Length: 543
Image (tube, rainbow, N blue to C red; front, side):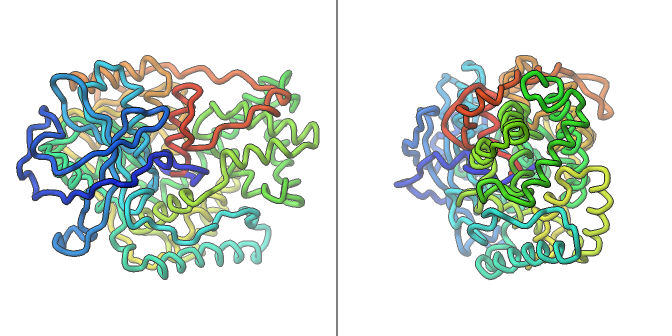
């Protein structure tokens, strides 16, 4: 699913200055068949160059949509778009892509997807990125409380009623600030309205149907679009799947257990490479050393920036992508063995510090999740649940609770989640790793059962979140075949995997000496080392 605000969103590098606003035409007016060019005579959009170094073919535009889709003649807002246009003689239509969140920008993702798919496949699609309403370059963009994540924050784990009240007051203050600053917008920031915006994009593109490719929260966005507009879906790919039965309070509790398991997997990896990190050969001992580091930072934050809450934020990305493990392990080892906190501060700056785009992403995250579905409004329920979960899964339970706590005080009423069960779709292709922490495996199985005729491809033993276009030839082969032909692997059904792929191997270690001169690239940076790292910089974490 969602998670983490992190430094810079994937779309931040895309410049939209000077774009021409386009008003969507009436539904299906002048549209072309999805097999025809999406930018045909039916399109109302005008595109301008917004290329980056890594994505030289990106173009940008924007479309105006109703703030309230029940009042199409009322106030309008703007949705920012990006595109890599098809080059083949025959187009398969628009492929809308979304990186998740809620709150993630999809503008740069369009360039990544177009570059990462086989050229023969990518050339047949207009790959369309977009910033959902309120996000990034879309207007207006939400920012409820700038600097909300500035360090050093209170310790996430309460040691007394006073500690807990301090964090409650902080979360309540964020909710109140959001209501004060954006009160007129908050009723209209939710998944259903984002989905209706997607259909306005379809109309503005002049297409009768869309193809869709979503990661993380983007899987829920795609499932809700498919529920509301099943006749307008041509093909759909959902990667790392939100459990539609747990939106949203229950899914966060499921994450707590799953992230604790991934943190244990990280500790086991560090123990396996004790020759490099010298933190012990016993995973339990390594984990104990990590919590010892946490206690030390509670007493004295590193660089006046990294206290226990910031430490959790810094190591949480390792639960999304094991490619971060070498950098995280090296910073950990340097702190423990050499009493040097500089690499830890560097890791925090690169992987967990929050800038203005992160503030925007978190504002959208809360606005969508708090509005989408009911949350407990009695803090006693949160306290009892978190205390119970923390006993078994201490790594991020309370951190995650405070991340979502504004929903206990949110100024708008919550809606009823959409039942995404669907029997009206063409075959949908699903991807899920068995050890994914952000969207645990059960969510993929549940979605598979709800979408009749869907096909589930499972990465056995994989723990990363967002698995296609990340370096697996097996997974990417199924993706490419589906986008080219529409065919899916067929298994036994009933929620079981229709095809399986082996997980990619864990990364090789990075010694503390090497790490001192190797600072991780910030999230969203327009730089690449390999496809997995590039993908996860664009997807971010917790968003």
